[in-house]
Image (cartoon, rainbow, N blue to C red; front, side, top):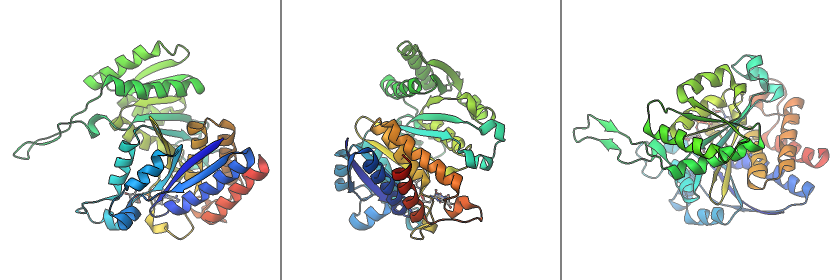
Length: 357
Ligand SMILES: NC(=O)c1ccc[n+]([C@@H]2O[C@H](COP(=O)([O-])OP(=O)(O)OC[C@H]3O[C@@H](n4cnc5c(N)ncnc54)[C@H](O)[C@@H]3O)[C@@H](O)[C@H]2O)c1
């Protein structure tokens, strides 16, 4: 297969972790016979420094012409510590999502056999956890109008708005993912109180007729917040609106005990984007110590979601599990034991892809 991948390394540790993921992608290309070309663009603080714009048109053109985007992280202390800065790296991220039409954020939660003891939950609750959130990303209360304050500044308001169309396109992704997994879909809402949630529930109920092989459950968001911790193994695919998804996916990310290892994808109409869930970890930038595994697992998601190449995706998750089992890990996981540099872990993973599969 021919693949055009846009690389947006971004700031801080972004370039270092993306470089390791690229080694692994090249190894997969070599092993499985794919022709892969990369084009790099600027995003975030480094883009502001170079062009004054956190998501320059030139970067958008590279992304729009690609099959998939691999994104590192953005953010720099000089902007974090200057709340008055008019142009900010995060604006680049929001504009990129909007312009690429990325309306669904996909965040899997799973455990790593050799790291399961790191979970804050009891072993019997987390061993074998494997669920995935589909969070609506471009609608709801984060974007609804009107928003603001009254003239006296004593009342503030946000508006939660969802159209049926926005719900359908997100829910379909959830149903289709469930069909390929354990065929259980949970619609997370607050339909006992909120009109938007009632539209979500009604719409999902209608759609369910088209997916008779998928069992659908409806749960209130407050109940899911509890059950995710009590019975995380009860879930397979969860769909939800922007605000609920923002909160629940962060809660879910600690279940595995390894937030620095978690990948994600943002899907939409055209291009698909893949990124680690961690930030730019500026304290580690340039030190060759950052953990590259979340970015490497993001390219496993890329092969699965963007190219429907399951064997390639499994080859990558396989070598990541091997590196954890054999202790070829960066210092954040080594816990005082022998640790490896970011670049060494990347080299090791790439060589294992070539040798082991
Ligand atoms: N999607 C994004 O690009 C994104 C997401 C979150 C934060 N940010 C930005 O990143 C900057 C730093 O934010 P933060 O410190 O809150 O979050 P962060 O994720 O960058 O770092 C938080 C902590 O997590 C650990 N960590 C994160 N990534 C790691 C890795 N690859 N290897 C080992 N340890 C890792 C470190 O202990 C670090 O101190 C800020 O500018 C913030 O705005 C960007």
